[in-house]
Image 1 (tube, rainbow over the protein chains, first blue to last red):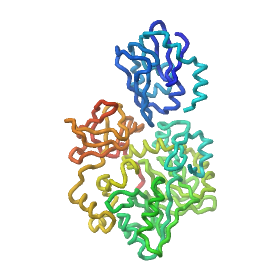
Image 2: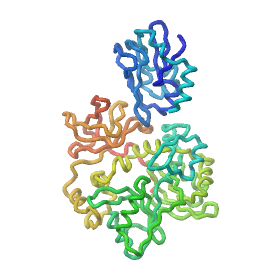
Image 3: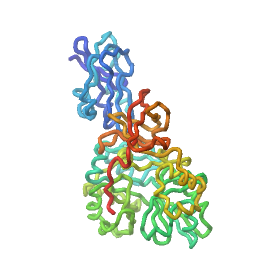
Length: 126
Length: 362
């Protein structure tokens, strides 16, 4: 798997061939608190970069999750729907949200590296 | 923005703060809302509720009669050191605030919601005569200790509290100082509310933590009270909702339900005799969908019939829970309804309250 990249909306994406895995960052889960509900996109759905793809709800509020790249949804992570606390436990591995067949790899260029994202989070703590 | 006397103490415990009714209050600590909720249900948790108003009212022989104009309780029924849940009622029969009132030596202690307290005092003052005095205690903190281990923990710090029955209070000694403690709370658990001087509150609260009580923020306070089916002012209650609509007529004393004689009586009498067109109910969404405040409620035939006033995920019932107002003819338990969340209608049923069974010590 290639190096993880991050969006300003706190999604991470990791590319493997033509398929990218997307989830929300550890920082995002810390901001949200305990996640109690996850709604994932339909398999086969076509999405454009920055479209709403999923919903997470914590005990506090509901938040949208956006796709950092355009493409077609190939697979979704049912275990986080069945037990949403799986997102809090391991947000950047087992707590992934969906796999997307990437349309245009150049869309990844505008995303941040882990180091840049960490700096971004520090500068924008909320 | 105001701070309670425990602000730095909370900060050192890793609290996240939110503005609430003009105060910076902890919404959660390091463990998070779900763990805090479960700790309270399984063991014991403490809440800083010092933002709430602690009003002491005293006066001559006509005090009780005057308070009966705005509070629909039978004051003759309230024994010394007994607490009652009730309301301040406006002239239309709406709720100005929901309160806990306790008879003490020389008068009454009234606990007021933080967002309402300044207005409450004005409204209470209107009913009192020149012989009456009232004082909002500015140098007192209020700590709620809630959960099944509350009694053991508090007894180890303040001897004698285990004798208290639910909704009763008394003075006790803590480090040679008198403090007033009631056995009460708002989580559906056994527990106590402890009124302690600001300058001693940190000492007191530190002792609670060393005895095993966990700090609990406003986030878990909300999930706990919602599972217990309890109203939160500004959500289930406001100036345009009558206690009868709120399904709280039990909090109007029997004699007062017959005789009236308080603000808004004509409207409340009408509600009692002819029923109400909308009423507060519990709502259980099917699946895991969460219906937050403002969610529209529809009948199974698609007619809009109500609105959600509070909704969250209940960690102890392990399911989403909500409360709201609905046209009375749809309010029967187990009646099927629809909730509109993010543009889609989801199944739900009217549920009995509480969602979570109480374990108060009677």
